[in-house]
Length: 388
Image (cartoon, rainbow, N blue to C red; front, side):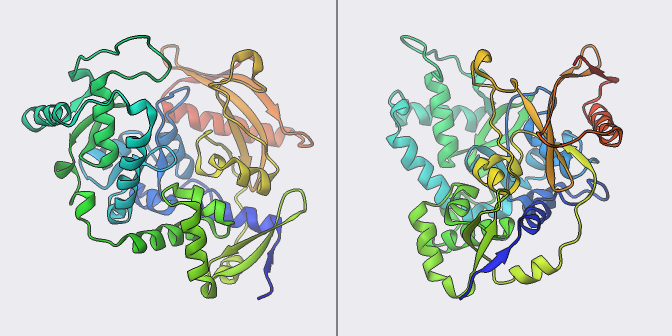
């Protein structure tokens, strides 16, 4: 079959549409529906402005407020926490398709060298016993210490045990308080324990690959593998081979004018024909936003080179500690470093860099000012203050 060619502008617009960023972030809000459409939302503890998971949801709908996600997790049980490429929340209805990921994580954690100090089964059962008797507990309820030299990422034995059992599904996040995770027994959080869901492994692989491609619109095998990070590269290739008749081969134009081979769902032509135009709204996106996360796809489609520099020594940073990409319509027009000082009631702008070749007339600066003001109101501070 002759590959379907997708021009760069259409590719960008389709990707942003599927990820909820092509339309204005207004209107009625259904938080769970937003998460279903995205597939998952990454969690992160850093709160320079707002934690990543809250910022990601707010970027899709400015009516979102932080307690909404907490309620969905702790009271409604509409979502659960586990690991995609990183800690994330996923719709609870995805649990049957996630059983293999619990199993994969058990196998990976069992092999990982830094689990060599994992408490034995009897010690882990004692921790579960406390949770069974006392109710959900955080790591602060335990007092074991790291023995020997304390290295980066060193964890006390109880934390290793809690995390191991969380990865395997024996424990689950019940709720959070100030982002501190409270662990409860899996059977008290999940509607069924992951290993009891009954969906065959092959069916899970099929769902994961289809769901990833559906949310991307098009991609290479590596794109599909990286979306959930819950299937292996060989499993993706096998899935493509088995389903090649219903997949459409495509060539996608990059921002540099090159053509990259991939594949798309059977309805790709209808999806492209149904595209509208991107909103002219300017958005400040989180560094962990799904559109930003896959740096290879980001660079190919938008010509936007980006990296997270919070773990880079200050002297070696190109931009800054926590720099936010600025999206306008269907292209990235700059970067901004902002920080909330909640005690002073200020959202501080401490760095601003237009993208090369992008002009910033007054009209664009007014859009940025409006976005900063919306963000100020979202996090509950009184004013925006520029120091650059």
